Image (cartoon, rainbow over all chains, first blue to last red; front, side):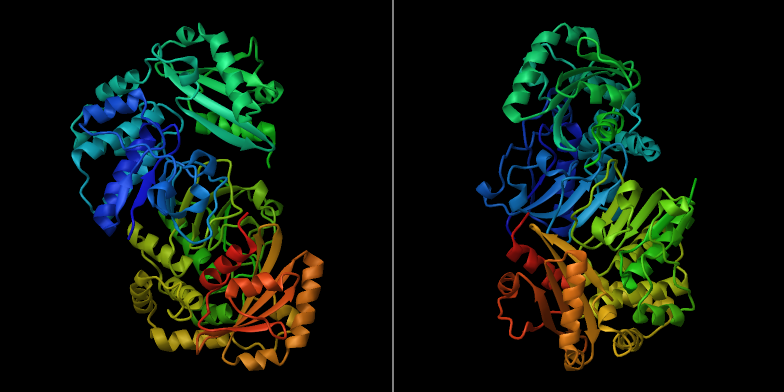
Length: 312
Length: 312
């Protein structure tokens, strides 16, 4: 049997990397599958902190599977094809482990699909370790914990599921770390934005969504100081406008999230400002709006945009 | 919390009915959800036999959820919207339990989705009973067994998964029936086609598939005597042509499956006979072709048609 790639989404975040690494390990142990965890992009600073902390190396970056002779893949932490590997439509999808909506996804044949509306794909992978009885190594437990902390902003995001609290406790114990202390340290490692260009910032954690007949790009960055990021507003807007022109985005939203106070500032460029205002019941001033209590792109941004832009 | 409908696909077969009944029961017990199993059509004779055998009544038939004040639904044994309840696009999909390919399906929010490439949705529902530790009542075990037998033609179809053999044994024991004896009796109850009009026959177990820019209808009937069914060929062709005109099908395929010898005869009307020939590497004579060893629409018909009609 030839190799099976296991990977999270493009612009990988910690949950994408952690869930793919741990699930690749699980399937190798449980079903003797020739899995290899790979990544669809370089890891960010937060993920690098976690990998380093648990003495692991980042999965290698691949862009296309067929170039490497790989025909079969497993997706974690995503399903939408435009967030996946470039040649996804030519591959056999053996399985998916995800915690997002399902859209822009289809297969010709039956597959394994495990989705739960919980805080992270890492939470589901941990549950599958428990169900199968396969022992979870300490360092992979640390990565799964990091994935969960990252996606839920240390269990504060509304995407946090009641069951995630116990999952976090379990994982912290197996990994041998103090949840709060480790979590804050890891999240802060991801907020060092000063060394990044505006082009890098808007691509750090960005996803495209086809909404009705529009393509909307939604990027998110975490910070401990929104205003510090916003001193770069005009350069960010230029980068967003250029990226939109180059990639055909109708609108580009940058969500700058304050991880300490759990709020966000929205920055928008594009044609459909009025739909964005409708989505968040707000008014854009100088292309910006403060979004009280908003920290989750998945739960507090994308559904609202989907509704405002109209269903396809 | 208002009621949650749980249902299988249109033109329900035994697996659709069984999986929805048992899963509605499981979610009521496990999560205290206000579920009601309903059906998107009248049950067929095979399913009626099973329900009667296990002293259960058929779920009531509904066509739209909103008309009944229901906003939230759980799908079993299907996911494609064109096989689902009429107002599916206006509803919240809480979860899916399925064993088919994923296509023509999308949600605005994260959900539970459990798919496995096994012989029946009933097999997965049984596994979930085991995982949760909720006791499976004898009569629902009988229905799940019936769903598995129906979809796999008594474990002979290539869609049968190695794990299904043990599932069938377990379920037969809980239900208190002899697997082979009960299974053949049930399958035969579904092959009494003489009382059915041609219009009924071609709609008994029929699904529509959008393939590239075409809509292809694929109906299947089980029999113990293919030639007996084919004495009605010209009347069947008329009914298929009328149904195509009324519903905009580009092609209509009727797969007449011999459940004893595990072969099928294909009858085709429509514009794309050459693509159908390409799909099955055969030649249509008098609109017909014998398909040696073909018994599974899901595994031996739809993927081949998808390939021949070209990917979307």
